[in-house]
Image (cartoon, rainbow, N blue to C red; front, side, top):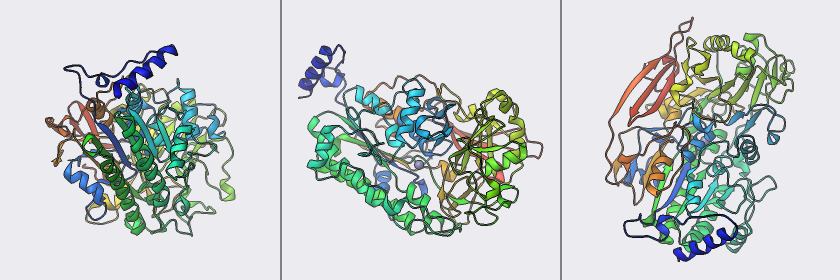
Length: 614
Ligand SMILES: [Zn+2]
């Protein structure tokens, strides 16, 4: 069957003037590799490592117990979704993928799908298309694991949360190759669905339009609490699509398959939780967040059950990861000028969304605009209302661009005048009580108080403009016996104090859940070595016999110790400190090294960073 399939495809390809070569496993010769196993990557967005137990998340805990437990795991900084989605997809750190933040400055002019805003939301299929169009057809500048699997003749699909799902095969946007199904499927803005898949959905009595999140989408506001339900309803449809349509089709195709399932839970529910309005506790440990963690776990179980029902369970590797950990939002600062101002929808004394831009505008004496160039009407009680702000005399050519990203903000300096301001910006940042860590690009020279971005994998072969400065906000424990579980952090966000957030360099955000199980992985193995989201695609390419054709050098490693017969590499820890700023502020970085790779545990001023060893 397999050989026949390839003969017919190759014949067609030759007739079209293309050349496809059949993979080695399609017509195995003596000594040639066997047919690779199948792969499911299950991403539980925003799942903390330490929250998983047989009680909170039985299916997730079972994989960690029966397969490989990557307990020394790492999200990449900034601990945000699309940056980590780019690393999971390609096996490269962000210095190569150029996906530096969820709200990204991709140079002027504004991307068409960003509606005039210079800072674009990356969790948007239109913006992803625009980014590809601007940056050589593939803004990540690297081959994704799914694209490599597709090229090698695997059946491939990505299903789930808008943005990170399409990133998994970011150049497959025609509906005919990798099947991409997300929140916008079936809508005018969405990626197309092939007739074939649409018919299969109908045959399975499933809708061809992705359901919206319903009540789960409502974040509430400063006097009205957010959600009390998980994202179960929408995810039911994604799971049904995967289990009732895709897996049976994969089986019928009789080829290896690779499927990425991106579960929005627990992230979306933790962000929008209505359990803790304006209070740091219970934060994201209330019943609504716990229901979302359980929902992700149950969805994973349904995928495993369907594998078994199709007879695919013995031949399928399952890798589970989370893009990042999670924290509770704090909106408090004694030093911020923005926190002393009055806003229409912010409790008195709390930090407003966009506070970093407001404070820098005051410290530097520069006008502040929305990233669309519109005025921010502070005197009318309005704070910045989009995902970014710009500073400078001319909003068409801003000196400073800030991407508002929750537990961290990214700062671009597109003009020589802006770059000349870098030392002053850092001085202003380190004078604020909300600043945890500061990183600056190497070409700005050493700036007291800051460490270079090259140290943390943010300098590489990226096509997109790199932020000149990254600032991580202060994080702390709200006082439980497992600090990572009750971490809080100052965050630049439209969400309220008490709702969930992430993005900082505290260990509560870098410590994501990671585990694996299947025919290529060891059973019952606790991996002591450090691992990160950049290692997965590298490891899986090796397991599946795929070539990722790396361009950049900021790649992860093969996690040999997790594979059958593999040895555990030695690892060491060390700490790096910046020169002190004039006021004594120091950015400290805890890192681990193993097999030539560096892993980042936490970074920041010692008394302002959860999990940092001074
Ligand atoms: Zn996320």
